[in-house]
Image (cartoon, rainbow, N blue to C red):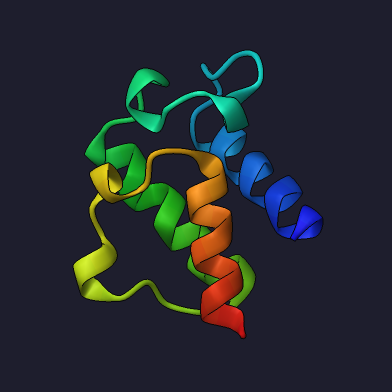
Length: 78
């Protein structure tokens, strides 16, 4: 799970270089990530981890924290 978290945070920072501080403990809604940034993040995550988000899960309001996305990826890969 730690490897997933490290790579997810890297992708977040690549798409949203304006992010500061410890993003894993901050709500995504408070990070200033909009739906366009979220779609870019999702595409990069899918390519990096070789999986696809389910259509019904393509809503950034569904994921409160980076850890929520990490858990989703881990569950999808298992």
